[in-house]
Amino acid sequence: MAVYAGFYRAFGADPRLRDFWFAMARDEAGHVGALDLVTTVLEVSGLLDQPSPVALDNASIAQVRELLDAAARDAAGALTIERALTIAVEIEESEIEDLVSNLLAAVQDEREQRRYQRLLVHDLGDLSYMIEQYCQDPVLLQRCDTLVNRHAEALRLASVH
Image 1 (cartoon, helix red, strand yellow):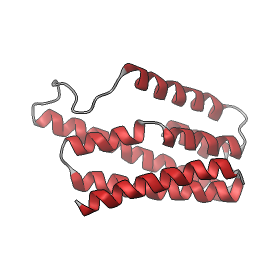
Image 2 (image 1 turned 180 degrees about the horizontal axis):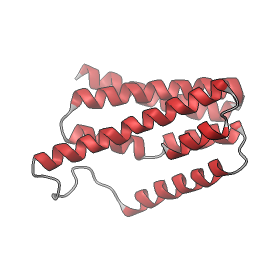
Image 3 (image 1 turned 60 degrees about the horizontal axis):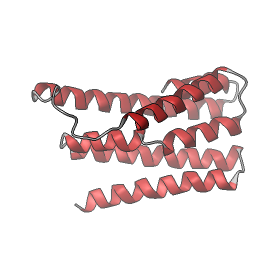
């Protein structure tokens, strides 16, 4: 959320980019809310101090933290739109999105998990569009489109079951 808010500030002179990055930051705030929901459900169920229902290894956590720290540093300096869009794809490719979805599934809130997945597919579609409009990098666009398709398929399969 902070990275996208930094991009909002960095590209504030362009209303289209400003609105895009604000929407991305707002949607990440929703993800924070989803994680808070998971915490609350586990807490009221007396399960908060139990082992996590989703396995996480320290290397994955360190990798995501390093990615976000580097992105925050980039966002604080002179930044091109191409670099900002690349950072966004790198963040969205990380395990963090799957982790949130898996945690929602673990507390058996399928409706919230599907809402989260729909929002993620929408955000990734918007990101793909912005890459087409501002970056013209076919490799980056393909990486983003692969993410859109993967999450759209996961959403489709979740809706079938």
